[in-house]
Image 1 (cartoon, one colour):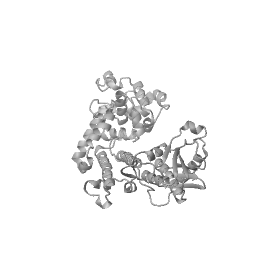
Image 2: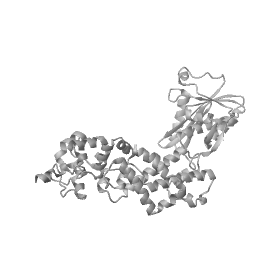
Image 3: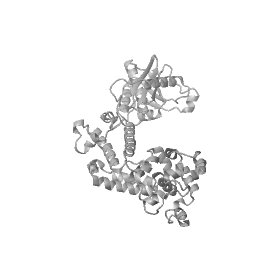
Image 4: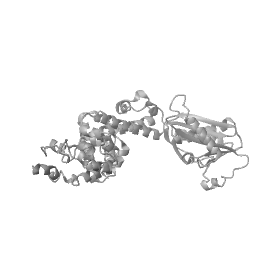
Length: 438
């Protein structure tokens, strides 16, 4: 809950109007204040000890340092300003210079699919969804002599393609890496319209079959903010001036011959390299968000790799968002225990000696080696039997701990020391027991 409050409420409030004040984040004082805020949130989320390194907490929770997150949000705002005001590269001065400072691929910022909202209240073509049941019974009844086309889009190995099949035509269109499958579906319908216009059909009944409900819903919507969708609407309107044009939804991968042929052509297009200047069409907001997300993930990874301290944490923690989601499913108590074990800032004798709570850091179980997190979790021979029970191995590596379900790690340390969570608060009763006996 605290994680959600921080990411959904606190951070958006902090980054409000970041396009105006982002230059302040280049100053060390501002960075320190923002770091202090995020550290407070991270400690509240994890329940970690106050000595835990900030970068270790950020990596564990997969959070970008707050000053870098402000710059990222400012970049998103700057792109909105750029695309709505038709600014050129030479105009990127002042606040908009953030677009030059963050290394986002220039291809996706140069040509956007977004446009100011336009309205289409007089649609001259029909969009029909017959339903899956009707298709299982042979499909909708078409007027005799109807000209039927099938269209489809596909994405394969980060390459996108579109396919069109119809009377005397089989078209496969490679579209490169930047378009989405939705854009490929729209491009296929647009290509179908262009084929019909080139053939100069007049007074014909043209039926276009597509298995994309998203594409058909966009084409029948009264509003449009996509350049590609708007171009497709205009082509359909032009084709419908002298013909009866109907677009039908067809269920995909159900053995319908035309749809299977269009799907094969689309996959053929996505398997071929696009030749020409990229992007093939305007970059969608979805692709842009994915690029920003990729930049954010790479920045978190590079920040952690460039960290020169937090030795114990770096042995265990590797930036991974899927792991973070599993960690956040733990209860507050379990999350505190797990964070302490992976960062080394926990009631181990090694850490207790570092902070002046103990004079001896020899392992309480084996009495041989230094008792730190890695020794307890991975190597201590005295608890090898319990390690086999939870990890299936007597000796493990720190990365094995990171790859293991967090709940299993917590259960293991509780099986080893049932009072692990209370060791620090109760004056290290267990850790001191051997000292008392001597």
